[in-house]
Amino acid sequence: MKMDERTDVPINGRLDCQQDLVGDGISSIQKVIEPHRDEGGDSVKCLLITFCAMFLFVMLVLPLLVVVINALQDGWKVYKENVVDEYTIKALHLTLAATISAVVVNTIFGLFASYLLAKFYFRGRQVLAALIDIPFSISPVIAGLIFILTFGNVGWMGEFLKAHGIKIVFAVPGVILATIFVTFPFVFRELFPVLNAQGKDEEEAAGLMGAGAFTIFCKVTFPHIKWTLLYGVILCAARAMGEFGAVSVISGHLRGKTNTLPLHVEILYNEFNTTAAFAVSSILVILAVLILIARNFVEWRRK
Amino acid sequence: MYVEMKHIHKTFDGFLASNDVSFGIEKGRLAALLGPSGSGKTTILRMIAGLDRPDSGDILINGVKVNDLPGSKRGIGFVFQNYALFRYMTVADNIAFGLTVQKKGKAEIKRRVKELLELISMEELGRRYPHQLSGGQRQRVAFARALAPNPQLLLLDEPFAAIDAKVRRELRTWLREMIERVGITSIFVTHDQEEAMEVADTIIITNQGSIEQIGAPEDICRNPKTGFVKEFVDVRRYEILRQMRESSPL
Image (cartoon, rainbow over all chains, first blue to last red; front, side, top):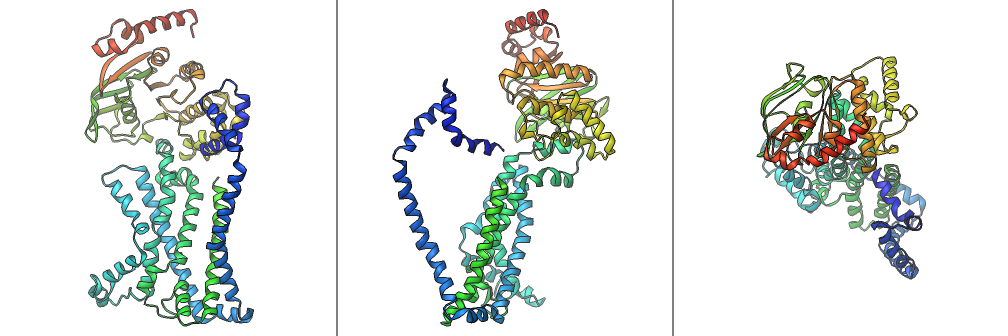
């Protein structure tokens, strides 16, 4: 709520200046800044708008148009055939399965980790926080390789897994593991600052009145973080759906078995089946747009 | 003695927050823990509330050793420095929380909430959310919420720190009157000696984790026992206050 009050300041700024003739520090600063922003602001504004619009057109709108046009270049019927193709559907299923797994696992992990780091002080707290950020800084290809070296035939646990008939590398579990790995900081990163800013007082107050940990979480903590949590989940899902590098290394590209949508697009493209490649891409674009809408809704609600 | 601290020691990461702290407060008293910041007064309050555990020493409430008793079983009400109101609950739900958690009957909760809203003169504002209240109103809600489950001991951490200087004096008088009316043993933490002198009937002066002196405001001013108290307490200011009090008694 404090944030809202603060964002109100620039909007009401001019009004405050007129009323507040005594002039405390803040409004006198605004008095200096305000006219400066109005004078000549229009030309700067136009320039910036043109620059941003052109950048977005070249980087975003044009490629998206190309996807749509190419996907539909052989007509609606061919597009439909490409989309409902057996391997495409299987790839879509795997992508959704990996995304849902990543969201479920990372939501649970993100909740626990952010609660732990925001509400408790212990030795190694900083180290833990830094470790959680590793998937952001590490190349996804390396992440995929790490799993091959850990769970593959020649890897550390290879013998053990083989003996027990568990297959991870070049199989669905590997794809899911890689997706989880790449996306696990998202929920944590969103939740941590919010929980940290909330402090411990409200929870301590509830505890002193006899509320148990579960009641405290449901009644005090959760209402505070629910929109942020959903926002983190959406970011996590978006990244999980589009993940290519890590999954590419670990999946082995087995058509109909370990192919996700992005991998399927690559295979089709390499086979010079451009129309199909773009048709499958368009599924990812549609998913991305849906996520964007959800994201904007949540962002609006969060305020 | 209603509250007793016996040879309490407490360290945080090598920092000595309480060094052999011993004192007692009689039933019905309104005591102030007064000291500069970092002198360990909040730690003492939090240990009485069960939010922190002493490393050694005993805490007694009403003659019972409560070291191993969770805060919720000690019969205390706690007012946090920033009130820690539940921001997603209405004023009425905030006040009702302790009773709801204790699974009290609906009618009883409703009656008690109404009673407390009347006590803090906020009958009309039960449906508001904390962010729709002024600082003073928030403090009153925090006070009512702490009192709802009928505690025997009220603990307040810097109750006036988050309030405008203008209304602070008004609220001090209000809080003192309320505590006297409810007749509850209370301890509050403050770094403002004027506040302590004006509100409390017993003052406990802390410095670097130790207790320097305990006594009525008059005693401490007339007879400061240590060098620190002599320097810390502004006797002249007390004289002015005393004259003010005499000219307009509560």
